[in-house]
Length: 487
Image 1 (cartoon, rainbow, N blue to C red):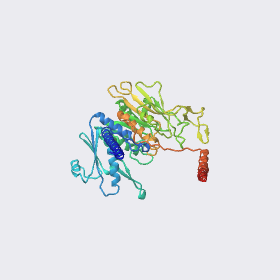
Image 2: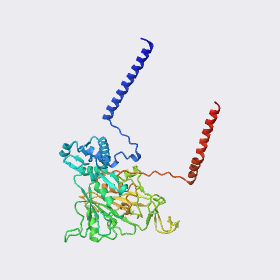
Image 3: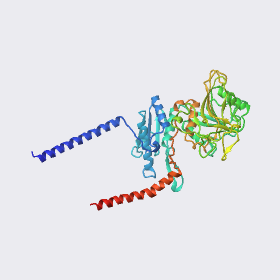
Image 4: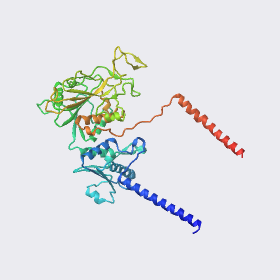
């Protein structure tokens, strides 16, 4: 055998062995990936990952031990946006299937597998069926997709994760919890889409399988009976009453709290606080809360600090700011009434104060020791009233209350101004009704990346672009010319 043939055989053998080794390695990696799946998301803000709230619900489902089956069906082929709909649904179901072994997902071609659709009673394209035990929620095309804009600017928005999140909430709860919003005193309207309405917050609560209803203590009562909070109330909302509640209404609130009720009270600057607050040892001093650090460009929106509480835990971890507007200060009794426990939720920094008038600089209020009260100033409180110690009856659970010195933060106009406002609202009601295991960040927080440049930086960039660039080109050209001349 000559040397050339030996070399060819040697190279061929080596190439074959390397090929076999690479194929075996790929097969091994594929097998490992099938058993232990890993995902990396390099998109901005992790937009391709499941939201923390969804992952938290999946974790609770896994702990409960009863699996969830999700079956999605394709959109009608040939229709506009059918490719986008199918791609969005398929990607979401794949991501949920990988998230936990307690959730199994299938994406089925509606036209090719009609028997599967008939077995589930599905008659429409782009339907998702979520099942857990005997419970079932069907999501239609209109629940999963929404069109925004008009004409050429009209776009299709995918709401699949929010819709499935809501379905999981419904399947996790045996019954819908009812939250009553007090009316009859100029409060915010829960169904209003106006800037001072609460429609967006109500939509978030309904996604959690909470039902929000209006309650008029004067009109909604049995004939001849005093005002009373219904027995099915899981929580009660007082969204900035403009007038003082009557004595019978105030007594109804106290009686509800004495049974271990849950109440959220939103007060505002210059408006009379409910009499219930005095029973809790809470007062609302005159003045408006200010701080050196404000939410630009407003001078009445202080940048607030979170207290240590389960409501604010995730907000603190993710550094999500909750924005309040034109805030009233809160003050509690020291010592507290018997059985009352206070926990601060939001407060100003040490540079905050209660503005009562006085000196200004450039038209903006500043701290004036002659009139103002130095901070830190508390603007939101969580209260627990223990049973058998004064306010709450001995055979009742502990009452839970949240008092806030602002109501505008929860309105349609301001709820999206702060990255943490939605989470703060939903987590507050989760805590009030006792769903503490479901506390999590709501939605997908986003951040705005900005490049801050001074005037000097701008001049430097201009000179680098206009001066340094041409100089570099001339130097390179000179170097090339010199090298060619020397040859």
